[in-house]
Length: 264
Image (cartoon, rainbow, N blue to C red):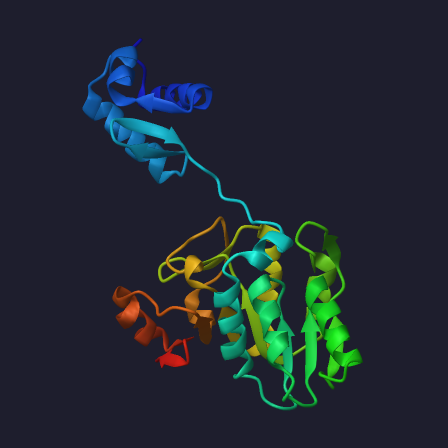
């Protein structure tokens, strides 16, 4: 059953999808090639994010998906609250800002009680409702602008062409955006392409772009690229960046704020 490389890799993936796991020695016998050849095949397939190599073989690649909004609210809640506090410290009276969707960005709203005459744009339904509640209670005295667009019921946000068109008419002082991954090499990324494109719009329309992300997003790459780190001015997190990023961040002139400390 000796096959050319591409056919063999298709055969490996067919077996993997059926069984969930493949053994290198068994594949070697089945395809009548050396185990070294099989290892090279597995290396290529792993590089293409089609499987994950394990000792002696490979398993099906686990595709991560974005949790629903209500799930995200309870995951790492204390870290997100800390980030919200630090991010709110960057907001000044009279600022026009965007608060992106996401459970981390949402926390910023809880720390705006001493800020005055803000204009806040948001694409997040929970953020809109929280701002309205704070305004009714006299905690928030600014202006609220909801960015219209196609509603995602699972994640309680809007995005798409309508939302993108609306943002073309705005320039803001600061945008606070949520991301699913931060990588020195790959920039900031999202699980969802539509959301990634809209987030890029939010970044492009702002004087200062600020990423809010807990430690689980650091050194992580997800499927849809938002933008390069060169387009981000500040990252606010609950954890410092990896030490090996120091030189790269210096070259980018990116501020990294964490736990009331700052990395320049």
